Image (cartoon, rainbow, N blue to C red; front, side):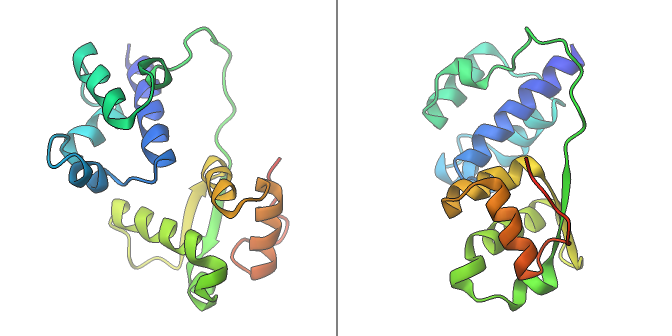
Length: 159
């Protein structure tokens, strides 16, 4: 059951991220109906969510409840998520018109993690795919662009 709770939490986090919301953003947008700490505990799989609450959260996110449920049909092991290391110092040097969406995303992650002293930020390849949608280009093209800007290390590739 813990694996399912974590998989459900990952789906909840993915939907929230797709909507461009931080945990605190959920709390604000819901006028306090959904507390950041509670939604975060659901996403980590630390707290069980009832079917009623799950349906209410699906309604809040304006998605079908089935979109929140993890795919349990697949028992195949998954490969570990690819991690990408963003150079925050280089990112800060770029003009906003180029790096604005990435800079806002990085700032949100730093806030969520409470990490403001780092010179780098590690994100998942999945996050780059989401950012690619914002930039309107393929993930591999965005990775190439970020390498060209010096934000990602040479040799970074996304398939």
